[in-house]
Image (cartoon, rainbow, N blue to C red):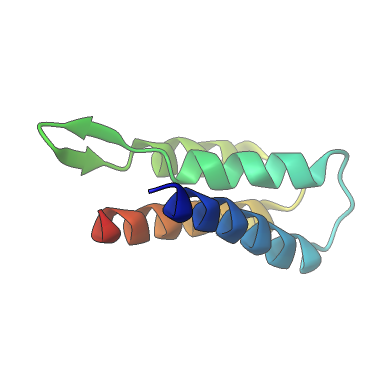
Length: 91
């Protein structure tokens, strides 16, 4: 089980680096903000062993109000959801 979480962290960091590399506008703490959007996009709420991806909705609402790098943040939130879906299928 620890191996899966290590791959999760490595995957999140690699995806963050790839998405940040295509970023067009410089932003203070852009790496940390993008990491937050990825983690928020992957957040899910479980009800009776059924996951509800609540974080993607919150992340997309926050992206809509962002002034810089909206497309990069949206891509990060969707990447977080995809990472979460992959781990739903594994476990």
